[in-house]
Image 1 (cartoon, rainbow, N blue to C red):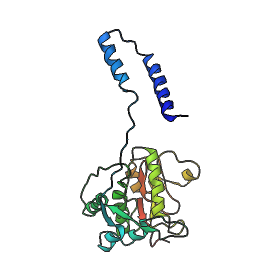
Image 2 (cartoon, rainbow, N blue to C red):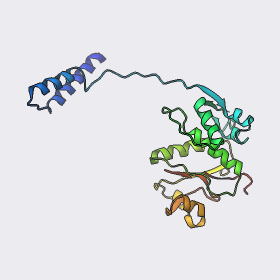
Image 3 (tube, rainbow, N blue to C red):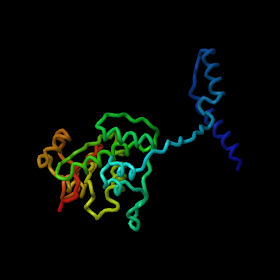
Image 4 (cartoon, one colour):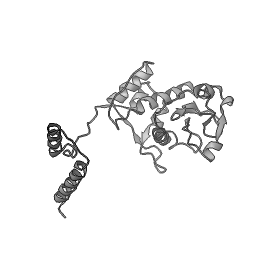
Length: 236
């Protein structure tokens, strides 16, 4: 099989199919449409792009050493953690991530625009986790992250788990988080607490009926919508 011949047959078949729906009476307009179709308007050439290399910044360990982040962040934000290697590897940041984290530490508002896969989420997750650790436990819900899609909230739930659960005893993460998307069922729904039991949760969720949390302790962050709450260090 010749792949180029196959492509040409597919394009030709598609061209005949699409043209069968085109009924234009005006000859000038018809000529223009035919010209555009013959030039490949419906089947353009392949698009090739290169992913940009983002300018390297500092490491999480550097920011901890500089006093910009809580010391526990150096243990939390590691990559490639496994059951046999709980320490993992040092997390290197891009320049835009480093600058975003520093802006947050200065209590300044900032907008970060960057391409997919450039690590935008870390520029708010790191400051939020640091904030919770700095304030300590017993403070209730300290951050709410709103996402436009349930799928994105679910994805971030998994990513947070890699940082906040891996490397720590089961059920004792340094910061507890929960997710509410309205899709929770079974055991997840059974783990829900009534909002009236947590005034801050009730205010943050604007009177939603329930928020899924992890059992035993209230949460700090997460949701389609993410709720991060209190640090559980020093909790029994």
